[in-house]
Amino acid sequence: MKIPIEPPEDDISDEEVERLVERLKTVKERVEYILKNYPDTRNNDLYLWLIYVRLFDKELSKYIRFIPYDVLEKAQSFETLRRCRQKLQEEGKYLPTDPKVARRRRRLAKVFKKAIKDV
Image (cartoon, rainbow, N blue to C red; front, side, top):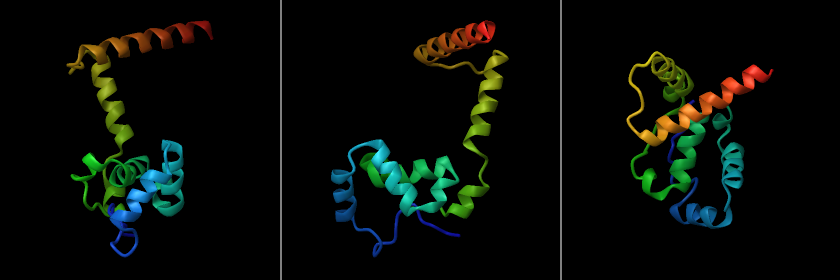
């Protein structure tokens, strides 16, 4: 099934998108709209994110034009990539280059270790 990131012109116009942005103020309202109107987003969080960005993030949407769902569905999952990155970093490889990210991850690791000990 091919569903464009950018809805067909006769489906939703730029003016309609602007009205949506004005009407749907919260992330929850916007996500609900997308889940209702783009059913494939219920199965894939990355696709949900892409549609969200395409509709509601004017700056970033300039760079996202069209990705058919069936193509996106075949791509390696974001979660698998995140877990691989996490595992490599647990092994001390390719650590974060941003000190803020490194500190936040160390704090979270301490919280999880403490929670596991308490269980």
